[in-house]
Length: 395
Image (cartoon, rainbow, N blue to C red; front, side, top):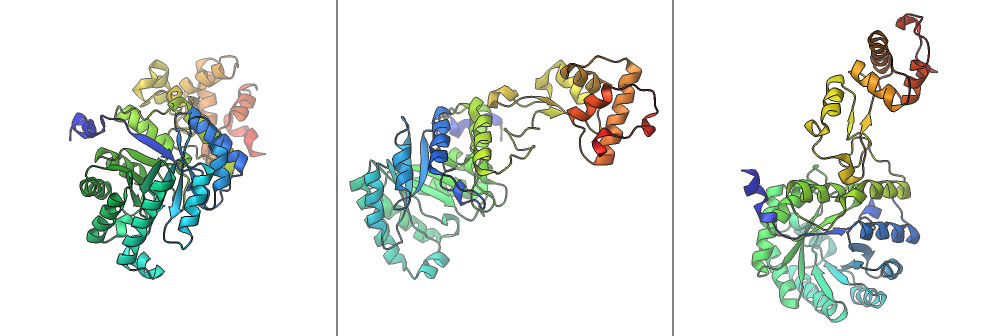
């Protein structure tokens, strides 16, 4: 498929709903305090992500109230409509000032059986929860879970029932992360057909590493809202990463989701600091090494024109370019690193000797050479053969 043909369906406005504070907190080792949630939400709004999922109706009203103090924030919560206290939970969320009530109901046969709920009862409760929600809050979204495991016929029934009850948006959730991009696209088209072209959101998990691909496929098929979390934090393998989604939409698909890309790295660092979850060096968009070069011919190419190797400039996402030293480093990188560190330049022979030391040290340690180790080495005299000079990193 040609590039223009592939991106044609996305030539329209789409929105991103942040789920870091709710789904992200369901990651194994994540726990946000209320002040941390407010701080992260403020950063999200500053970055242009104004629709924020605060948590669950009936449980997270304190968070809802706190987030509503941030100007421009649209706060949503999930209403678990298969619980007995769903009506009271909806009323508490509305009293706290929530903007969007997302009615959640499990729709896969195995899930309904485990709860002892018949399809008829499920349809009845879905209609009731949506109708009550419409009386309480400005927007009601119907967001069934385990959609990709549901019976196709029953799935059409539940979306139709929600639409008849007044739902204004409809979610497609791949709760177990088992769908392909083609399957997500098929489901989005089905939902739009059943609901008469209703607004659709997608919620994808990354168990097969397809969360971003599935989310983009859903948007291309007609969805206009996508759930995403900072660094892809979420249960199990996590969810679609907001920094990856925003960048792909704007750069690859030429779609404005209203996100300030230059805020992405700082936002990721804030979430990492709040959660203690480290950012992998090679993490797309925001990782420390995604704009790094160490191979000598690539360093030379980057010095000539970074766009020859980089798909987008690091400043686009608030990141920066880094010169690393390791296996594959040569004289060009050595001279560039000396200049970067403010160290005196050396002649060709000394540069070659330093490059050989870097390669030898990196191979021996099975990792790159730090700037500190290189500076210590470069600052010394080259009076001994390399083989006789121990690496300062081996202490």
